Image 1 (cartoon, rainbow, N blue to C red):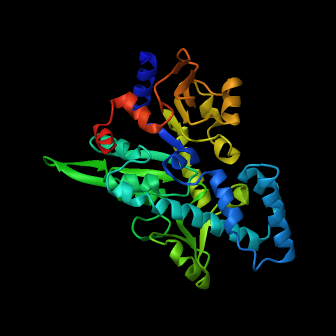
Image 2 (image 1 turned 180 degrees about the horizontal axis):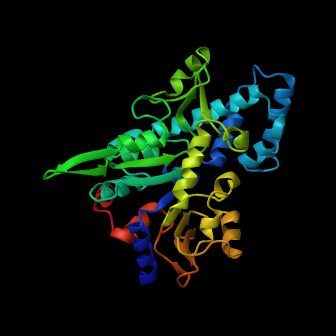
Image 3 (image 1 turned 180 degrees about the vertical axis):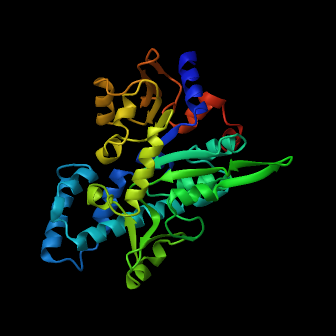
Length: 369
């Protein structure tokens, strides 16, 4: 394998990079992507309680998805303010049901030491290091990263207190909670408990809004409880693609998450993008200047680089990077710091293979195949 390529990856991982994770990572693990989610919505959105204007608007969205072959985000965005609260609530609930059903099929795999994303290996390896904090930004609603961290012995902050039911936990209080004071001889030494900080600007499947307006994290709620949620007026709190995204993210907890996310990005030494399409302008705007910063290493992995990612590369708006995408049975490596090349070795565009390049093949993974 290209030595410069491997060395770049090794150096990036050593810098404890900030991860920016999009739907491509979860889709590779079995969570519905935009296309599958669109199909699910078409089949499951319940129009029985819709008014005439709601039904008409939903039919227009379906037309954009089916006949015009638009992506889900674009189809919903085109509706703008025309989407009523009733239709919006139904789309949010069905989106939640789709992703929730998908992730439940994976929790046993992760608890049984399988690693659908590659993060389990990453967390287990860094558990034995001096690294005390790993930062991950993700637009995904699912808990695959959190479950991988938990199974590897890491504590988790996602904006809320730990535990089955959690209220908002400010970073100032988190910093105090993560202090670990021990005696070295007679001298007190302060260290941090190892933990991941996961920033979810689009929300999470375990976030719910209560009748008094509070948003809490409540774990363990599955699709079987959806009818009861409605009766007690508790609603999922996720920002659906294309609808109300910019409005919702100005409210708690999203504004708090975004604020902390910006600070982490501003101090980052390296970035690793996993299945991230660069299609989300209100997220991407937070790291545009970092993309152009030639002193910060960047690795971009995707099954297929999005048009926006390609535009960033072609217009030289991203510096000091290696980008990898699938090409037939192999992988294409694009870069401004090493000579681009094509390898026939498969899956270099996956996080698992990235770690194989940095650390060698995962013995446990090969045994489980």
